[in-house]
Length: 98
Image (cartoon, rainbow, N blue to C red; front, top):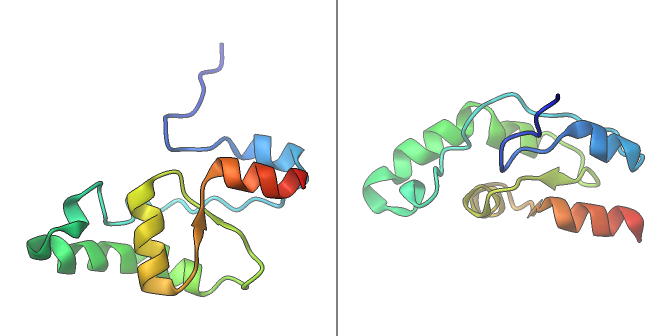
């Protein structure tokens, strides 16, 4: 029996069935780790982790590319550090289905 992906991860096959071309970034944590990155003493570390993969990858995507993250803190970091808006899976499905 196939197990569903962990909470916060999305099975790309579901999005592909909706007609989307999916690219999953295999980069681990975005650096926020819940409230960790919101604390002043952790801000620099949080941003350094985000700059390892997530933030540069998002900055290098076309503006029409949907950026999707399940975690609220990740979406906030994306918005604040890249001027892009990270969407939740439910928003992506709604947008796709019109």
